[in-house]
Image (tube, rainbow, N blue to C red):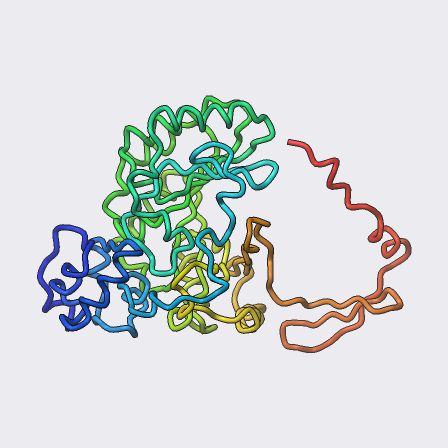
Length: 372
């Protein structure tokens, strides 16, 4: 069904019946998709539905948000908490995994629910949102840990909160002297661009700290004119934007598709930051791309698109052990201490250290000297 044939939507689609009524699924699929909806939340904003040009699995936006029967398939290695958030939860809403930064999750509500979300076991559950007392306890934890340089607001999507609540939260974080950076992870500019207005921007700037937004985007087609305008409003207000994407089979596992996405982001003043390898969440295996394929894609991009366009390809180690880069390697150390280096064309070159450079490389890196 073409977009022009669909009824105008004024509310988000949150049920399988809503999907059918909007022409996104066939009536015969509803019963099976109810079983998916019983386990994993559904929500598509009117902007997302309007942006789907053809209601079919080939559409890169459609596949990200419309549930599929394959989500019911279980695999032994899939995990309810694939990146180990719970292992490092210090108080409700706080995940403190790394020394100088932590996650603060004030809500587990989103404007859309991605079909590959690594927190899909929790998102969409209103009871997971922090109460006023719980948020105060989370802020007390941050105040009490002077090693915290950066607070990352995640969830859920922090920008579903009201402007008043966002301003209060940003002001509270701004009053913590040792916090130097506030990073916000969001889909809102992509899926509800009209939300990015003057009042929200004022709320985001109320902390008097360095504030940045990381937007989640997986395909160039998500960057329609309203989205580009919303991004421009944020950047023009002095808020730096970065992007994170997930490598997804059938959506962006193609070098040309990734190149188009990353160039479009830079063109719109967004720095590509991370390309995530898909986490081992339940019911997402039909989106999975192998690490080998991901490395080949990154190798295909290196040298052919601007370095500013290249994100870091990363894996969150299951169990809570952190995020590590897993892109291709271009250098191999030989037994004699020299190196073989491969350029972006695949040509191999010899490289040898000068003087004491090689010996110095074996010395301790000095991590223990890193201070806030």
